[in-house]
Length: 83
Image (cartoon, rainbow, N blue to C red; front, side):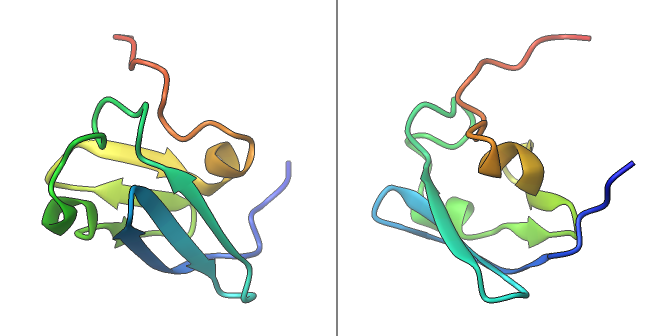
């Protein structure tokens, strides 16, 4: 079992992308385009993001993305499937 040793300290929306800063100083971004729960939403909602050691959560939009998933190229662009 591997564990995530770096955690997000900042996430913000700007110009069509979510920008994330990790505790280590690593910075990365990903587009909201293609994510059915984020795309086209107002900046105020996209900037209301909660951080956890494992990922990002938008309570207003009912969206959760893991840091592992984002770094692997999965930033929610696939439709969610019912369990």
